Length: 204
Image 1 (cartoon, rainbow, N blue to C red):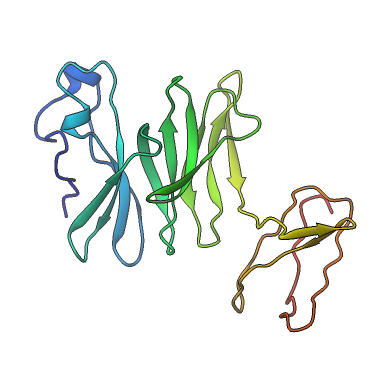
Image 2 (cartoon, rainbow, N blue to C red):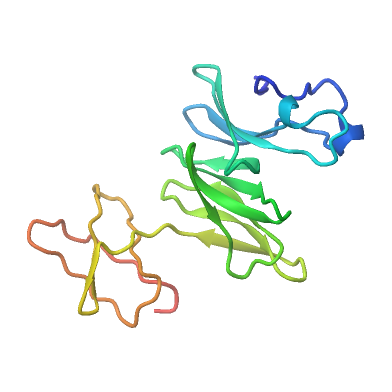
């Protein structure tokens, strides 16, 4: 199946003279239901003679042969991975020329920047728990890998204790914040489900 969002630069015509891009519609991630994510160069955003390529992310549904093309915050966007809940990751080129990873779904995205990144953070894959894997570049352009894990924030704080209000289902893994704590003691209230197990941060 040829993946070719409508309005993309024609892949049968060399566009190298304009922006040195040989591939315009890379397909980067796929689900068992046939949804594919990738990036494309729309003709409207990439007129002949453009000095730099401007990418748009896309989600292609094979079952309906339909495309959803998007940009994160209006910036050049490249989608790399998608999970069964439809959460997408990838990266965007910001107005200052740097790169940030992103995670979310169409219309609601969050940017991610590794704290140690100096020259860009790139999301490459996402699992069913919402964990994003990717790479970042430090000040010397050394490449390092990262895993970003989503966590639920406390719904209230009282006397140093954190309360969480999270909808859960059986056998699901739920990540709880805050990220830093001196100790961990888990307790359920009346009517709440029990924990099957607790996974503590590295080093504990």
